[in-house]
Length: 304
Image (cartoon, rainbow, N blue to C red; front, side, top):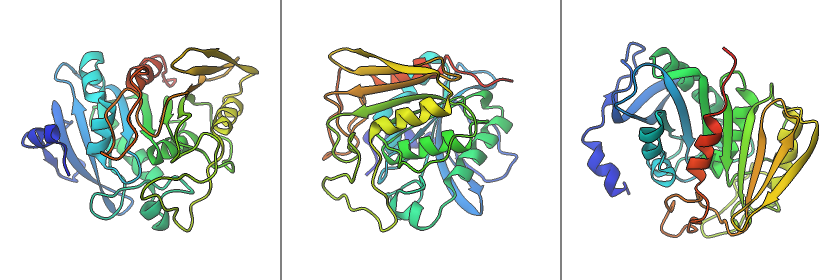
């Protein structure tokens, strides 16, 4: 079901054609379709009216079983975009009806089973937004939740020449990933109370959760930190700082910043954001993931 606020905004949405001559995204909220790798794909954009010319771009990938509107509601990036001056984009995964997933390599569901080329879609989408004059190619960032976080990891590994930083939230890696093509700034957020993507690794549990035949158990959360410390050529051990809200481990001597926030009270939700579903975990209120992610993103830039 559409969120009430988004339904009100839908009247102002612009349905874009698939033609390459489509103009830059209009100010405010807009819905678009595009052809990518032989399939029609959808995405939402939010462009502050104050922006003139190419701007930083934040791609937010929704969780498995969600959709672009769900990602918008959980993260609240539109409000940040207005305040900070960036374009927020919410791509949509593949699937039947409103249940959409991403092909993160070993997860999840429809997108994995149908071998959907989601890396190609995100690559094409970045190219499109750069060509339209919407996005600054040196300041493209990707974040996502759950299955969207798993996809974010994959984008970081396979598109390091197009993405200045990644920020996966309550997602996982699988333990068999090859080294990233180049260093990529990475900020990882894990909920220690998450049962759907457990910090300890293995198979998740929860209402309606059923692994697909080709799904693979998750690697422990500390594997993701180890992976990016290695891929980002960090020379020292990660240093830890703890507060009641989180433990932060940060790599030393890295070619790209590498951070891991572990939230002792965090469940399977976007910290500080909106609840993904009525039955989903309640987000913690003592950690504002969207603001922390944007502060991290805004300090990263690809060489021109």
